[in-house]
Length: 371
Figure 1 (cartoon, one colour):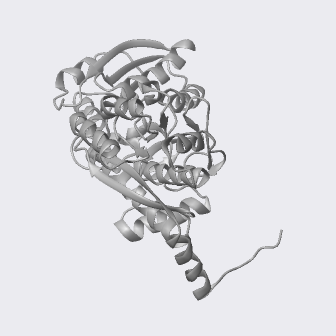
Figure 2 (cartoon, helix red, strand yellow; figure 1 turned 180 degrees about the vertical axis):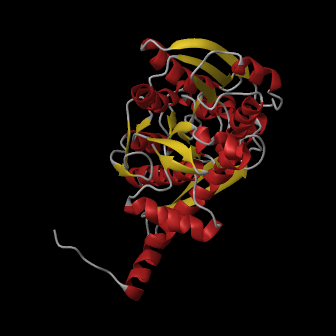
């Protein structure tokens, strides 16, 4: 096939003509920029912004004119409900990108399901059980944690484990179960399962209980900040350096390093994304993100970036029929999409959850490195 190159003013004119004839579609983005889940939502919003700018510069929207309505849920499930309801009923959004957290998702996404508006959510839990109009933009907690469990078992041969997890968040429960079930099935003893809630700050009693257990592994499944604080307080209570700390993708947040400091050195975790990934796509993404925000992107920025790319791929495939039903069908057909996540290509599956692999990382000298 002969490649035709369009350059200079001709290229700009072509993009302008395409934009002038593009069909507008409204996309609602309820995202947690403030509050408990802002560690994920603020970065996710930034990732969406980088993807939007990239697509605008390259003409990547094709026949679609995107109207993005980005609003803060404040990490409040009631606010998320209000926003999703307004996006669909007042703004006539044909697609929802959100929510950030599972707590918000299970409260708000039934509205989209009821109104038959497709959703792409970066919430960690398996939100697809809300209904067949809800898609995950990231892989399931169980699958990502199983990948960690396999490598951890092979490398470190754990024998006795304590699990600490956030009982008021389905995603963190699922992530805990993802590693626990695999290790238990392979003969690793569960010494104890301790629970916390997202509003907890004092882990003194919990830390004492952990330290008094005969274990070689501590698995923590909660937010980045809470995970770091649990580790700090456990270290202060006398947790041995021989006890390995294992965690969820939440550890991939810079907040984990900032709050945890030296206490989190050596922690192991799995991540959908690694900033140092060597693909050309990731290098462009990192460069653009650093240029705009002054810092490297984290896992949540990569998820937001990917979320918009998946959405636009589906919108372009559905055009000119940009009704919710056509968009939903197009999402199911996203295959081998280049991505900064995992092994570099993303495909939706029949379970409305994508596959792309993951990275097993550790903290070394205050930085994330691949294990």
